[in-house]
Image 1 (spheres, rainbow, N blue to C red):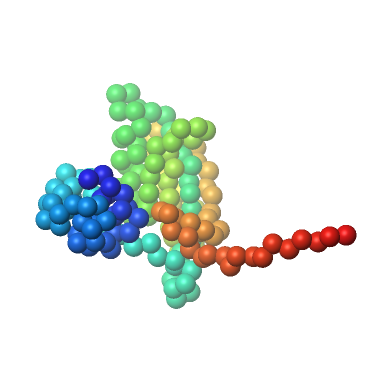
Image 2 (tube, helix red, strand yellow):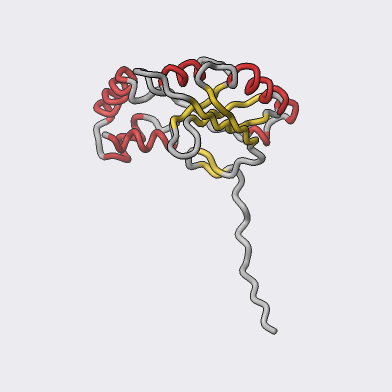
Amino acid sequence: MEEILRLLEKDARYTSKQLAAMTGQEQGKVEEYLTQAEADGKIIGYTAIVDWDKVDKSSDLVTALIEVKISPQRGEGFDRIAERIYQYDEVESLYLMSGTFDLAVFISGRTMRDISSFVFGSLATIEGVTGTATHFIMKKYKEKHKIFEKQEEQEDRLLFV
């Protein structure tokens, strides 16, 4: 049944009938599995991936990746600080990372100034946060397996001299 989850992850619009046909399962079994997967928290929600660059330009949003370094709390590790951070409405995604920083925070705002205000006014002031680095996303090429703008295939040209 894991195959059903993988299919839904790629396209959440599949119906239970389509999923049954694609996996060779009975439609009733698929519906039962989906209901249980939602109840168990295996399926957290269904979303659409929107290319906001193609929507009304007055709704432009700036998106940023913020690297956060923290001091883990005794007995709670990174969880307490992560929980405090993900409570903010601005936070779209939050990940515990390996490497040079501990948390990756993705947020969107109306302007770079809005994001900067969030970083120095809210994020950096949390007890245990020891450093941040903000990276603004300039252009999205691919997200969740979906390509935003496919480039026309270019014909290879050879130049002989």
